[in-house]
Image 1: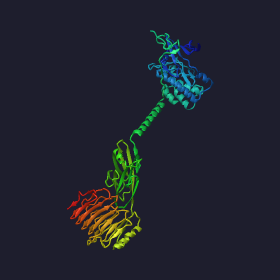
Image 2: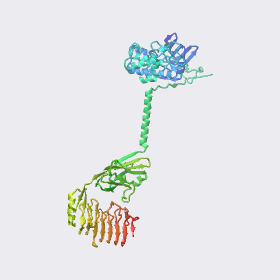
Image 3: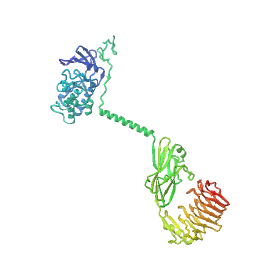
Amino acid sequence: MQTRKESARGSVQLIRHKATGQPFILRRFTGNSEVYQRLLDYTCPNLPTIFEVARKGDENLVLEEYIRGDTLDFLLRGSLFYQEETKRVVRQVCQALWVLHSIGAVHRDVKPENIILRGDQAVLIDFDAARFHKLEAENDTQILGTTGFAAPEQYGLSQSDLRADIYAVGILINVMLTGEHPSRRLVEGRMGRVVDRCTHVNPQRRYKNVLRLMEAL
Amino acid sequence: MEYKCPHCGADLPEHAAFCPHCARDIHPRREAKKPVPLLKKLLLGLLILAVLAAVGTGLWLAFGPKSYDGYGEVRYGDWQILLALNADSYAPAPEVTIPGEPEGQYRVPSRLFINDAHTGEDASEAFLAEVEAVTAEFTGQEDSPSPFVCSEPAYNPGAPECPLLSLIDFTGESGTAELVWTFSMKNGDTLTLRQTYEVIPIPVYDYYPEEHPMDTAEELQALIDSVSGQVEEAAVVNLHLPPITYEGGVTIQDRSLNLYGSTEEAGNRTTFAGPVRVLAAYNITYFYDMDFVGNGGGTGLSGSAPFRATNCTFTGWDTAVLAYGTSWANVIGCTFQKNGIGFHFDSTGEYANHSMFNDNLFEGNEIAVQLDNVPTDVALNFQGSVFRGNGQDIVNSCQQSLDTSQAIFE
């Protein structure tokens, strides 16, 4: 057993099955595990397979597929990505988000640390911050997500919906191409316009959904 | 409730999605749908539409009704379908050029032939069995002062070698037009056969007695003989004869020409007392408004080549008019009196140019009309002709088809 991440909200551990030696990720966290529960029913090459979800009170235990590869965050420490490579990775992240959005969920924590490159496949992980988008809710009840990648509405400006993820993808594109947040340096050219549209303060002005963003890419 | 792993058989909690014993997934899953961008969807839709259209077009081309179009001929399956001008069933005539006098009226046949493309044999019966309808019409002559007119395609006994023909009527001023035969086949196919018709104006030369000597049979013969050297072969030559009597006859042999008689105020008409012979085969030789007066023997007007007499009289001949050789002859509005034979057809030709023998008067002849040999099976139409006081009216030894329904036998 190896602890990969530990915080006040929970931990992530790499474990191995005693008999088979097969690696798994075991997540412990407090909060809502509904998104994991729903993902039990799906397989998607751009999402980790969720094998089991257990809940006791507010405590959750999730067993999920171990994705062998480097995080985008790790890879970005050494270099930047070419435009074509960026488009390919972001399209795959969009495909993962499409699955989440299609079940009514918002990831709310799209960032390089939560994207693992397995060969030529990008896999979006960590749905601890994810929640279901409820139309009647006026704003998010907790401050979640990662500073810089989280959309303004996640800080309480309005309820975060799938366009919050689009905001984060816009930041991701800019970081992959420039290494910096768009507020400091926006990537030039057409990709800059895509980032600009993704990160518009008013969610209404962002791409309506990931499909539109994929088209733009 | 007992719940076992389907892979290793280990006991599991009721709602387990994973077997911790064998580390196998036991939860039913489905593959998440992949997002298809709208543009891609649109392109895919267009591609599908294009494929469907291509397949539809292919099927239509393969199995739908087809159109065939050609000038002079088209190939349709194993058949060669062609339009010809003459009896040669293997000679398509995509362009027909016909010389015409400015005021001339003409009729030519557009003949349909159907040959087996492999053997060359007549296949008209098999082909026509597949035809639903056939029409013929002229196009491209909206501004013509004298448009071409064609008859509906039909069998014509005058040209038994072809299954259908359309008769084309035109004048020397008809210009150019396109004849279109359209065959609607029973299977939905359409065949279009085209022929371009063009009338080339014929130069016309008129010879008058004031300018050219023609007062005797000898002078007239000399003029006739000299004309062929003076004008082109295609030209029309009209000799306008004075109202005199030619004691001798003449022979027209180097080229066809037309003789126009005349009448003076006292009533004398142009008259031939000697035999007139037509040997020139280039075109029809016409005789208008003249008398042929014999003395009881000989032949008044004879021809081995085509000729036509209109408004002429024939009196006192052993044979008044004789068509022989390969000639086709017509007499129209003529009078035959006191001849041995009025009109004698004894030609072994294969060509007919006119079926009318109308408005004649046969009176006091031993035999008014004798038919020994007549080219083609076309019915000779004696509409309006009067037979009066003849020894025999019609001796039809060759059993030629006749239309005497409107003739008058007194």
